[in-house]
Each structure stands twice: as C-alpha cells, then as structure tokens.
Image (cartoon, rainbow over all chains, first blue to last red; front, side):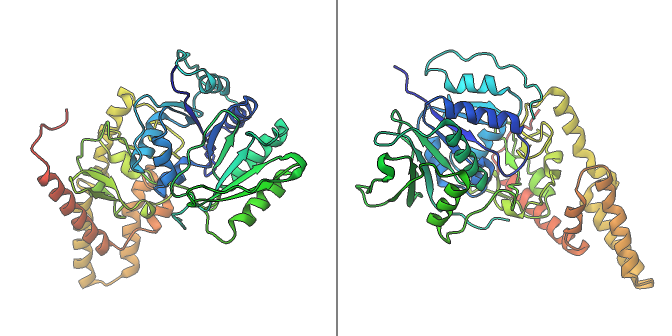
Length: 123
Length: 290
C-alpha cells in the first residue's frame, strides 16, 4: 500500500498574487474532506527565514503541495536548505482551478494524476 | 523587513481522538483567520500524524472537547511544551486573540507588514555565470565554499525590484511574488529565453557596460567639477542616466532612490566584479553554456 502523502497548503498571505477565489475554495474543500493537512501562512516568508519547519516538511516522505508555480516552490525549499524529495507533487493555485487542485490533493495515494486544466478567472 | 527568525509556536486544530469535530463553517473560519494572521496551522483528524519541527518549542492544541474541558497533555520527551484550549462556540476573532495570548510577547512577522521579496535561483537552469552577482549593487548574492552562486543576504533585496532576474541569461532567477511570468516562476518558453538573452544587453542603454559607463560619467563629472563644481547638476545628470532604466521598466523608482552614491556604486561594482571574477576563475574549467 503506497504511503499516504502529507498535504500542505500555502495561504500566500503576504502578497495578493494567488487568486483569493482559488485559495479560499481549496482551503474550504480540504476542510470539508475530513482529512488531516498542514497549512502555512506563506512559504516565501518561511524560506526567507530558513524556517526549520521547511526541513521537517521536506523530510516527511511523500508531499503534495498546493501553492504556486512548481519551479518557484522547488526553488524556495532548495534555498531554505530543505530540498524537496523526488516525487513531490506541486499544484499551482495561480494557474489551476480549485477543483483540479482539490481533486489531485485528495486523490488516494498511488492513483493516477489527472490532467490539469487551465484556470478560469475566479477572483 | 525581517524581524525574527524563530517560530513562536505551532498551532494544531485538533479533531482527533478525544475531541469533537468542529462545525464545518467554524473550522474554515478559524483556519482562515489564523493563517491570515501569520500562523502555521495543522488540521489533525483521527487518521494522521502531524510533522513537528525541532524548532517548535510550544504546541498549542485547539479543539472542541467534551464538557468544554481541554485535557492536560505532556510531551514524553519533555522538549515541547503542549498547551490545550477549548474553543467550543468561540468566534474566529476570539480564537485568534486566544492564540495571540498564548504566544505572548514572542515576536512574529505578520502579513501586510512585510513582503517576502528576494530572488530565488532555479539551479536546474543556472549556469553559475555570476552576472547576477556582478549586477546587484546591494550585496544580495554571494558564492558558496564550492564557488556556487547563492542568495546570501535576501533582506538586502529591494522590494518590487526584479532587475537581476532580467539580466540572467538563463531565466534562472525568480521572484515568486512577482505578477508576470517567467519571473514569477512560470515555465520558461523558448521566446522567454530568447528575450532574456537579449536583455543581457540592458547595459547598452548606457552605451555599453553599465559600470564602465558610470565610471566614464563619474570621470567626466569629476573633470567638470574641477571647472564648475555643481553638485546639483551632477545629481541631475545621475538621475537622468539612471531614470532611463526606470522608464524602460527595469528598476522601480524607489530602488533608484535608495541606490548608493556614484562613488559608492563604482566601488561596489568593482568589488562585485572582482568577487564574480574570482568565483569564475575558481570554477573547474567547463564548456560555456550553449
């Protein structure tokens, strides 16, 4: 049985670059799902401080992250001295719909990844 | 501005064994309020384990407990202080106030008071060419012991200035809080790559190498000063010279305002160039990037 992923949600609270409609909807659907998950106020802020929690998160095995562009998220963890392990799934709340993201975040471990659809303006 | 480097406490919205699930609306509102205040929060249901960092000295468990009685909990290792609070029927503002009270006077950054603005290097693209180190006048960049380019002083970076990302020939420098791609971390298209390659020539705006242009201007200014000392005129010329970069959208006005004096710019440029050259010279010989 594949290991259940740790789910991480970034609120991007320190700047208005993630559409609020998407991030609110993703959080609401995670809350309604009955599953456990981790949330952070802002991954950029944590990376700027080399927050030790990033290290902890990067070491917790299989990680699924709802945040920003995968290139940026990978770079932030790397810069904070907590490189993400291979297989980390990064979902982009700036370009994907809330439904796509929630569907991928909550799918069972080992289930195939659905093809993401481009985001429609939801803000 | 960075005000602290430690986490004040970790908040857990506990809905595991021994607690009752929160009403759905209250759960979302409490989580949102805590996140928007700057806290990191774990939502825990009976099926999960929450990762705890060695930096988390205080764990605050919030839950709706039977008889409104939060249990007393203790960390068996004794390393983490665990506090529990019953939040039955509390509105989100009251919950945030309760968390703030538990945090006490431990410092914490808050959203809205500081924008995390600093360059992030995409090492899968970076060729270690040192152009960013050479370009940035604010000592944001440095080199590691292995002579690899690094962001070393990210709080020196000027908010909303993505100028270094524009001189990177490989589109390897990102600012995640920037609006547009590929600077925000979006995928780099072939067109982006071509455009960024061209942007290395921004120094030509000043007639060639930006530093030598500044040096020439400084030398000319010095010679003029000997004949007609006019600090106001010199300042005006410097402004004209640099505002060309602003008018082309390369450097925000407030960054220009915080630039060091022309002499200091020349000194910093020489230092940065020397550091970049030393780092390049120390690299093992390699084929130039195609």
